[in-house]
Image 1: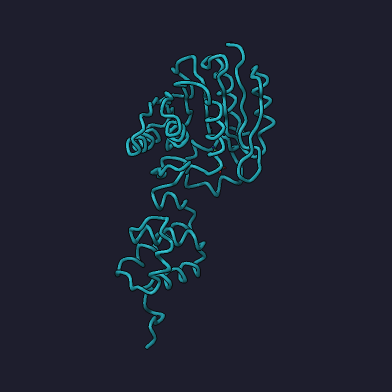
Image 2: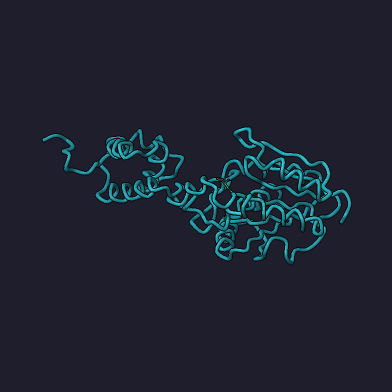
Length: 285
Ligand code: GLN
């Protein structure tokens, strides 16, 4: 008899990762899911090497292979782990919210630059989802008054739980964009839905909430609304910063200019694609 007859389930980390690779799993995803099943932190990949031939408990393979099957069926790793790191913060996420993307950290960095030199600035994050943008800003700028807005009560529950776990005093509003928001804001920031209905890319995003992704025939319905209403809520010198699709920068800059914003510009994401655009309000409209 060999150590691992074909009829026997993989019992060591090495065997389980080899079996996952044979199923078509990416190596990093498989390592993260196996660490999760073993109750170890995601940063502990060295542990898997150091313990590569340890025999694991009976249920580890069953739980790991079930997660691999879900991953292969397209579920984001973040949902399977229940967490995602964003701008240095550990956030809990599930299918009620979009998975925070590393590209959105660009938007946070830009927002923080806009707040430099302002004391106790007032900020609104529209369509906060997990609370990622709002929490990252508040973490970096504890003096800011940051409100996280979402029209989805489910999403706000996720954001609230994240704020509580991180000990950040975020404010919340269940609203349709800036409806009911105050005036005199220093910054309105948003990663709104911006994918065009019918975009073939949506198939790969089918496990995430469509309400967080899709925005009309050209993907710009929500951005048009936000650009339209934001000036009434910003102070003079306040910024509006928006994330958008890879091919929408010129259109969004055009909307901002048409609405009277100044210093209209775009910023690149990690892949070098113009991914967010914004402008400053020079005179209260
Ligand atoms: N960045 C996401 C994607 O296309 C879309 C997020 C959004 O619509 N706000 O993968």
